[in-house]
Image (cartoon, rainbow, N blue to C red; front, top):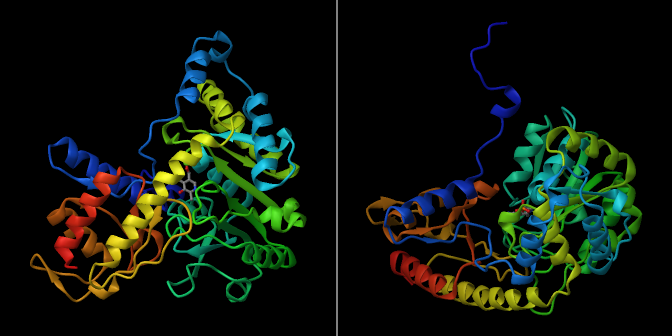
Length: 400
Ligand code: PMP
């Protein structure tokens, strides 16, 4: 058959990351001299703690790290991940179940590609993080959105899932605290969800990347701590990016039962080989230390979270749930629809995002990117001053 497109059907299905695109646009505007405030990126504004950087510098000088190492990752790092997983998720895992990946995103890629076949359905609570459905599409699977609302605290229940489970359901994707909503499942909610998935015999990918960013004395609970019997069906995905302000170092990992681990290791051995040894040594230093550097960053995020929710609540037509984790606020903005702002009729959160960027020079992400029209996502992982300045601009534009 004559091919008209150079692009494979598989890759043509994948859309650009809206969050990265908006962040790039904001950074480009800034570089051209425009005073833009970016609420777009999901990345801490802090530098990586000094002791972690020191470990990397030392590693860079050691010729051992200039060579190929095992595709699944350095043993010492996998041991540190195993110890950390017992400390934080209360799950005992062997280093032989761990693959070190190029960030959490790559762990999700490996997991989805390893588990999902053409025609498989994958349940994804929405609002969702943009990468999940795109990688499911790449694998040939069908992302099945399970919609949640402001009133539900943006969380799914077994009763809700029951309406979306079919004979083709292969995988459920869980993330708590959530990007983009900041929703945190309680212990009881986690247990109920886990028991339901176990009973339905559905595989689970649980994304624990925001585990340490919880507020008001609340803590996150691993799905595997709640229901250990799920271990044979569950892949844990995690990474150092959010906890240690290490987004640029690109270290994540997946923890899976032996059969899945073997298949995903084969995949990784052909796709990337090992991840940068220098970054792996930095991640090892981060994980072997206690969590005191995290406490400091979390306190700053908590202060900004409260400031952001309070300032957004003053804006006409905007409803904001107090997020319990991660570093995002996800206001419901449909109350603004129908209004005319700076000569433009606002009919969607996409319209609103555009007018906020054009008029107030503030970058936010439209809910459409997360399968949740009628919302905006604002990250509060930026400096206190920029946060207040950006929100004042929004207040001025939309009226408070
Ligand atoms: N999971 C979630 C829910 C995320 O928000 C992110 C980053 N935005 C990741 C995984 C991946 O992070 P990284 O690839 O930087 O480790």
